[in-house]
Length: 330
Image (cartoon, rainbow, N blue to C red; front, side):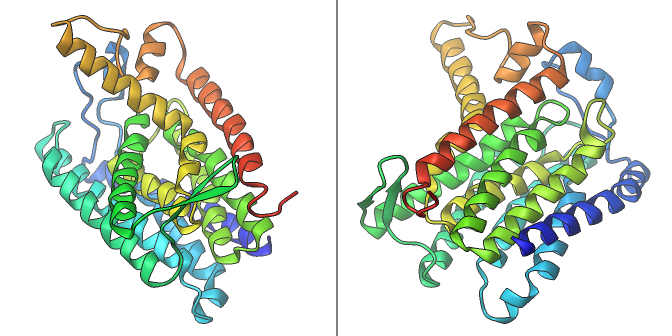
């Protein structure tokens, strides 16, 4: 637990400290967010708010993993470094996308095929790395039932790639309201930290603590009204961190309960697009994804964050109970 707490404190301190100068730098670089014209009308007031702010918690988390986790790294326990590297690759993809948007002054960066291929390559490489280093088995653990389903490695690799790319983009879709993606991911980081501490996974516990501390530091600047957005730089990094931890702990299906909000947000988007095409213009939701539907129904951004984060916390508690037998927690 000591390393987890230390990592959280280091990540929070570094993120909070670099936040102000980073926002000032982003202003000087004119790295303002371009707001989609088809979103809620009042979101146009956010036009020009600095994006790529996810860099602050990426720096904080990386510093915490390297400093607080130094004893494990020197001893050859590299699991936290693997997850960090995986998340950094997705963060880099997001950064390229954000920078392209800033340079073009519009809300389009990399093309969808470009992002998909880069994300797919990262997912396959990470799965292979975990397999080669003995951190991952093809036995798919099923929470709540405490059983595992043995799969051929090829099938597992395809499954893993699909889940990783889907999870990362689901977190990205959730990042549409001040503080939402970060606020929803805080309980997820707490869940991972609790499992790692009680299961004795010190290195991964350090990463979880760093993720928690970095997000709390970022929320100082990202709560409504946000002074900075995390951008794809931050949301893709978070997606990589969330699914990377699930696979490093060899329990990817736990992403269903802990990522319930990411899942619902993504499904609302898919349902809206599919129904619109099938009915030639009709809609299920006022606007997709779900947070925009609720906004148009009168929900404030702060209410959205509190409710969605609360739901995530409840499902994380349920998930903790669902894996308790596997780890003999109680």
